[in-house]
Image (cartoon, rainbow, N blue to C red):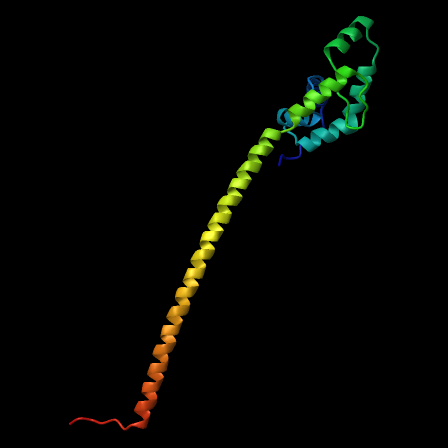
Length: 174
């Protein structure tokens, strides 16, 4: 965990704003932007997210809404496609295509499939080991039972011998 740094400086705010805007404009998530910013600023991801949501988000929205020359707006619109937030509706075909491309790229299906296969192999290996250990346990229990019966028989013989010795006087040979 990173140590508490205290108040945010304007330079830190500016850097956080740049990183988030760059990531969002490239179609990356804000979460990955906060991760990058946390490394750059030496603050936690939660601190970066909190600062963004509480202070910088409004500034960023105002700077986007600031009047620009019409030529710049057209160029910006054609080069950047705004990705909608979770609850924001998709208004154009380009947004839908971009959203679907990013959505499929973000799904770590291959990783999940690999992990699932690995876990199934581990499960099969552990089940086989469990079966082997259970078989060994049953064999050991059977051996133990046989040895116990032998000892009980020897104990009975010794007890009978003791009874016989107590009944008969011991003869000494001189």
